[in-house]
Length: 152
Ligand SMILES: [Zn+2]
Ligand SMILES: [Zn+2]
Image (tube, rainbow, N blue to C red; front, top):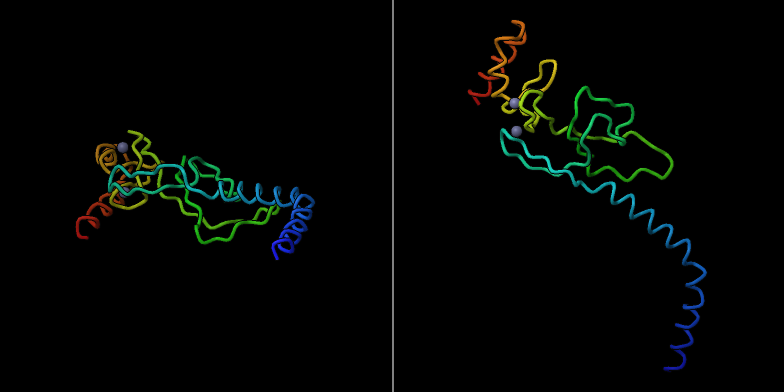
C-alpha cells in the first residue's frame, strides 16, 4: 500500500515541473492584480475625521478611463467590481472620497459639512474666511450649505 501511494505521488511530481511555468505566471499576474486593488493611501478627513484607505491620489486615476479631475482627488475603486481582464481596460466604478483644501491643504471629504467647491475645494473654515472675496452666487450657495448643515 505504501509503495502504491509513493508511485502515485511520484507521478504527480513528474507532472508538476511541466505545469509550473504557466502556473507561476498566472499566480504572479493574479498577485499584481490583487495588489493594485488593495487600498493603501490613507484618507482622513480633517472635518469629520472619516478615515478610509483609498486606491489613488491624483488627477487621473488609471482605473477611471477618460477621467481627469481639476484637482487632486482621493479615489476609491468600487470594491465589488470584478477584476478587469488583462490587456482589456474597461471603465470601472469609483468614488472620489475627497481632496485637499486649496487654501490650507488639509484633507477634506465631499460631505457638505466638511468642504465646499467654488473654483476649487475649500474646507469649511477656509470657506468661511474666503467667503467675502467670492461672487454673490457662490456666497449664497455656501451660506445655504452651512445653514442646511446646521439644521441636520
Ligand atoms: Zn469629512
Ligand atoms: Zn482649508
